[in-house]
Image (cartoon, rainbow, N blue to C red; front, side, top):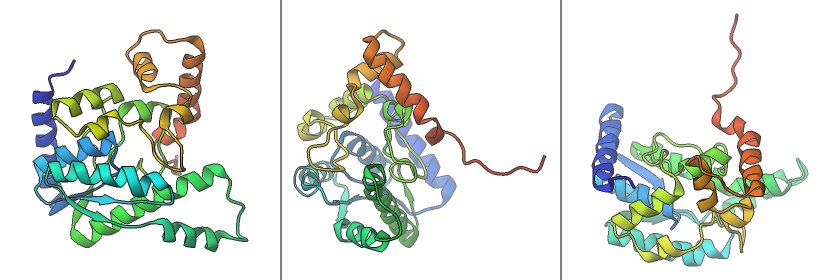
Length: 243
């Protein structure tokens, strides 16, 4: 297990150095009410008092109920400024604008909300001279379980090297609210959705694989397939070079 006292100090200092180099006045991040955003919010607030968490509900009932309540509980415990932007009408307007332009399939539909959230965060960042903090972890990055130019976009990420298992360990060390630690992880892209069900593998199995240990053959196949299929998400943008 990591020494999370030392980890906390190092990550707070990392954030402070990023802010000092950039010359911005603060930080903004998406406060989803989940494990990753909770840890990022706690770290950012410790490094910069001018940290704002934006709650960004969009369509799903869980966004408006459980996730919003959990996001507010984390913010209250760590004294993080909170704002809310309802993105449901924005998503509806986008779909209306696309009507007759393209047939939106399930993949395209599920990626709209994460991209609208990032658009919103960058609008706030630009308006108030802030940096956008990323909330992605190592486990999800490995299998590409994130939206390109959505939750995969950010100016800096203080938890990118941590697996989901380590995220939970860190949150327990920080005495984060149980509601964040105990609920099933979900992007809440639609009602009833959970990360592990959608992936077909648990985070425990995924993190075991990442540690170099064996997992059931069928689960290993899922992990390796997801990793290969999502390689484009981890590569730099393809650009033309005059050779």
